[in-house]
Image (cartoon, rainbow, N blue to C red; front, side, top):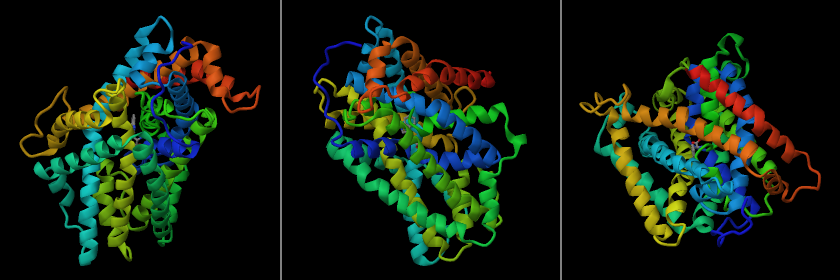
Length: 449
Ligand code: TRP
């Protein structure tokens, strides 16, 4: 890696703030919407088990690699990958693919986040009136036109506003405030769900694996979720790595982020499945689990209306840090030379993301839902192209870059910052990146073919 660095970008102020921002990127709809619905359709504990293995063996090493590349080069993801291996600017393709992935993920993420914010108001209103959401609420919202598009635009304005405020004053500060709120709300919902009579069946669903459900299909789903969950494979964590203070130790930071993020997923599962089983629902509602099954099931328990609203407040809180990190990848790249500034870059990127996101949002509207690309709706195409192609391929490229192409001494020096001399974690991590992580990604990829 080159010895000279350009002026470092503004960064996070403290190691704790850096941890909060990184965890804030990881935590999001992945925990509260995707993880429960995927676990629900893939048989619960079997999926959870494979997911845990994917996080430990692939997620943590790639997360540490992204943070290390970012901090080593102290610049936006596109510039960092282009400069990571002297003489091989082609690695910059990882960063460019990452910018593309940021737009694709945001294209459908802001649609779902918009539903979540709409549900905050709908469920609060219903709880205040003492009624439950009328049946067909979700179909009307998701199949609508102006309503979901307005919410989508709203979450993009919110995200852009946070980015315009800056790295420390926007991203870091928002994460430090929102994460504790999220944990408290989650624990309240867990207490409610776990104390229902018959809650044990939901706990068993999540933790007692049925070996018959361990299929290659589950492996690919779990690996894709691990990438999506930990915000890997597209330079989001590389970008945050550039803001990481030298006092933050990379391997323990990656470990703690992965552990805390997995805890949030399991706590979300424990808020949902015990209630679903106790109240005679089914866990396999797919993407509609959060928006259809949950309000219907929660309505059957005491104070259910308020708990439904609380759950959507916590889901809304969770989406913010994730969207911030997705939008920061192109914003950091655009504003790297100071012109356009962060504010103008954020506005431009948010506008482009809306343009790309509206077709995904309208893909459920009557009359427009017949429009397919490669046999998929726009929404499904963005989701599949990012989760099943761009993120795993990006993650594979990052693992190979870190394990094989990066100068060994420089990479290990970055991992060793703040560690005792002779610490074994850096070399062990590099070993995982050389062999196991790429091997498992390829294995899962062949399962797809
Ligand atoms: N990790 C977030 C979630 O679980 C989503 C996310 C944020 C993401 N940044 C990302 C996904 C970068 C892929 C790449 O909701």
